[in-house]
Image 1: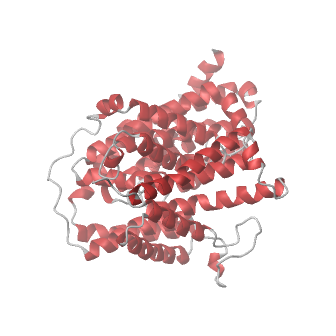
Image 2: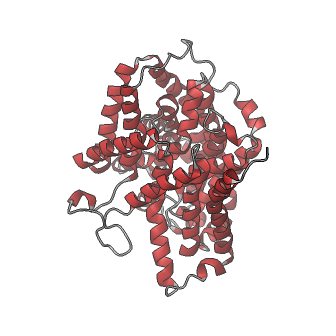
Image 3: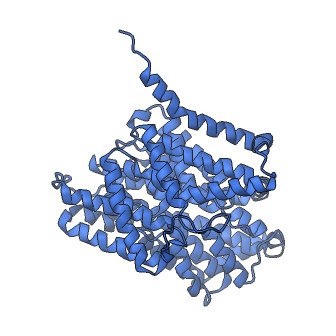
Length: 495
């Protein structure tokens, strides 16, 4: 009890409260700009943490990352441009709801269920940290390979078009992920003598290009759609309690999946959102409605990505193993402030750990009022004519791409991927599947090669370990799913 009271005193300090509010507003703004990810928002805060107290420094990381993950949904919903990679999984769904006149319902669902997921993830961090960390440590490269491979197979489940085309698009993404020398052998591949390609293709320029630039190109070639009904946005949270009661099982499933994926080092909110959206469609009673503006996928994926954000701190705090890129930055800040991660942190600095839990809960609670204000400010985009919005989008894409690598080559990549995304969508190939291949490709290859080295080129360990065998079975089922659909379509129908 003394440690808990001390934690309340630490959080109630003026500098900590100011840090939480300022970082929250900053995270909302950065996350809503296409191309500027939650990781980038967190990384840009590191120099500022030099001048803050330890608790205030960690508070800025927690608040900014939580807000940025949510606010990435805003441009995805209003303009079909995901603000962060985590929101790319359900961008098409949210945008379809906007075209149906349900923008506030889609944005409210993203806000409400992100806050719930963040709080549930925090409770998991408090209650199950030792058990979850122990489970994560039992995962080897064999399990990580199947987990990443299973994530790739989600491309066949989230696709609205032919599953075969989804797999083809995913292979294009895998080919792009092979570019560069960041592979187990350290050998340059597909660089064609271009120095800028040695570092590979970052997911952010590809994501911004295929979603944003291709959307601008489509806008140039098509007539302006009929304007949405001119009305003031209603209550952002209206109908959310109804959605909570109707989709309570998908919500809890998203929370659980997010917690499990978040605690696995290297996975993060991106994978949690993709897997949860795919599971939502696979187990839904109305899978045919997905992609047409159906909120069920938003409920599950929105809860999952923020739940994974909190649970990703479990291996970081207990063992100093980063759960994702954000916690990798946070570990550096912890060491810099004398809060060295490890089991002793929970005994020697218990009050600081309780303060961290409180900050997580506060950040997810204030996300709701601040998120409503941000949504209302961003909703004015719908009233602007397309001719004035599209040039601003191109400018933001160029700025966001340049910020990822501080060179003009990233801007060129955005343009190239924009053309590629435009051609793919015109021919029915889902660009989301390609982005998934780019994001997951290096993880699949690295864990596969590392596992073969460990097993002396034997594939038996991929199937002998219990958890690995279960994941292999699930991956096989997801792989055979499109083949079963194709076989069913070719069967002669009875008269």
